[in-house]
Every structure is written in structure tokens, then in C-alpha cells.
Image (cartoon, rainbow, N blue to C red; front, side):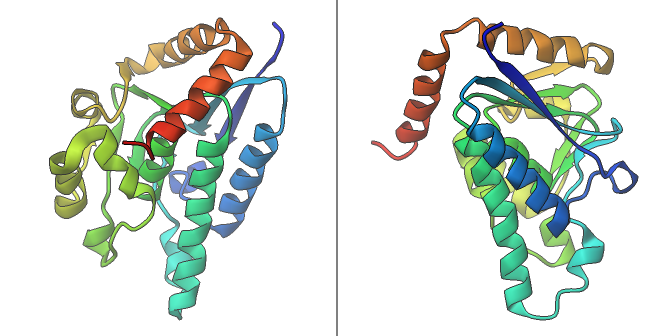
Length: 212
């Protein structure tokens, strides 16, 4: 009542919802468009198929890169999506099922709240394929601290949902059958707030990241 709750569902389920340039552009445009909606109250972001939120960058696309500028363009596209999510003036909830890896984890930590199925897995495997994590992995220390960030980035080991919750990487873990209901309860709590206060609160929280 009195506003819109938007759902953004990324569907590349055949490839564990890996992201490529066309997908990154589409998703970025979706979030930029939502940010302009005056009656928007909340956004729920999920991946189709139940096997992954976002399973990482599309390796097939990455193998076509021949020049440093190709990599720079691709990484910039990932950053622009993450920034578009962070710039949405209302809460963005990540609904995580299955794998959330690499670029997918960077997208997830760009959301305001993460609710995961108890079967979910999280990780930053880039160093195992010869790449450093260079985009919104920089957001990880504020969530889980430097030590646990080092563990994820330097060992490239995945962690299960229970560990992610204990570390503070996700806010809530639920049995898969109850995940949607948990997301709905979170949405209901958000839309009970005064719309203007919610937008001011999110804007303040972004400022706090830059203030002493």
C-alpha cells in the first residue's frame, strides 16, 4: 500500500546465472530505472533456477579478452552494476540460493540485506583462475573484518551459509522452503516504515562509510 516493491530476477540459470556484458548492462539499467521511481519502497534481487544467485563472471566471455582494456571494461561494468545497486535510495534485499561466487558475491555485498537459504555457498575463487579480486570485494572488510576477508580472497575456499551468517556476511539463513517467507517478512518490516525516513536513513548510512 502506498508504494511499489520491485523484484529483479536474473535468469541465466543454464550457466549458474554467470554474468556477461549484456547481462551486466541490463541489470544496471534495471537498477538505475528503479532508483528513479518515486514510489519505490524496497527491491528484492534474486537469481533464477534456485542453483545460484550469481555464480560469478562468465568464463567463456573472459577467455575472449585479448587486451588489458578488455578486462578494464568488463570490471568497470561489474562496478557500475554494484554502484547502481548501492545508489538505489531504498533497501535492496539479496535473496541468495545455491552459489554466490566471485562477481556474484561482490553484487551481493552491494545489497543492503542478505537473506540466504541454508543450502547456499559463498566464495571468491578468482585467485584460483589467475585473477585478483579487484571490484566490490573492497566492501567485504566492513562486513566481516580483515581476517575473514583475507581467508576468502587468499584461500579461495567457499563457505557454507551457516558460516556466512556467523561471520556477518549474511543477515539471516533459512531452510530453502522457508526462504521466500523470510524475505516477505523482511519486506513487510521495511514498508512499515515512513518512506521519507527510510530514504534518509539509507542516505545517512552511505555517508557514514566516509565519515570518521
